[in-house]
Length: 184
Image 1 (tube, rainbow, N blue to C red):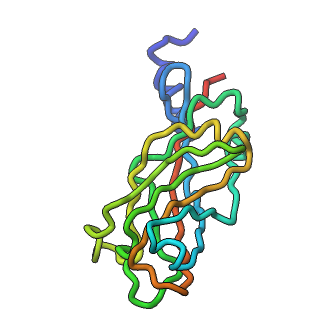
Image 2: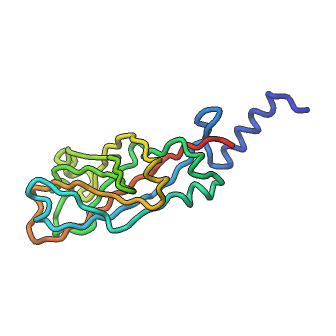
Image 3: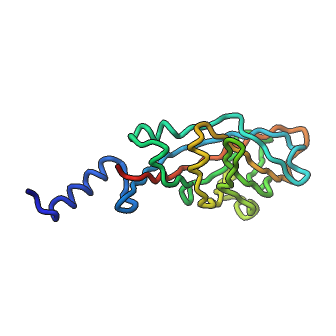
C-alpha cells in the first residue's frame, strides 16, 4: 500500500496532465478559449443613442464539456475569464479607431434569457493603444444556465455617436471561459 504522501504528488501530476485544475476538493475547472461573435450594423442604427445588435451566429459549448466526459448536470459554473474580453473592428471606413464607439454591453442569450457578461464605456482612453481593438470589462456573471440550453447567441448594445450614417460596420467580440464541474 502506498503512503498518502506519495499519492498526493501523483494525483496533482495526473490533474495537470488532464488539463484540469483543482478548484476545490469536489470540483475541477478547465478553460474554453476563442469564443467569438460577429456583429454588423449601419451607422444610423447606433449614432442616435445606441441599439441592440444581434450576432448572426450561435455557439454551443456542450461538446467541449462532453469531450471531457462531463454532462451539464456536472457543471457548477461557467464564467468569462478576467481580462479575456475583447472587441475589435472587422470593417469600418479607413482610419476608424476603436474610440468611434461610446459604449458597448455584451449579453449572451438563450431561451428568452439574457446575461450581461462584459461592457466598456471608456473607449476614449484607449486611443492609440491598439487602434482597432479594446478590452472589455468582464462582469463575472455565471452563464451556466445559458450554456446548458445548448445553442446560445449574443447581443451587443452599441452606442457610437461618431458612426457615419449609411456606412456598414462589423465588430467582433472574443472571450474565454472557465468551466467549473463537479468531480466524479
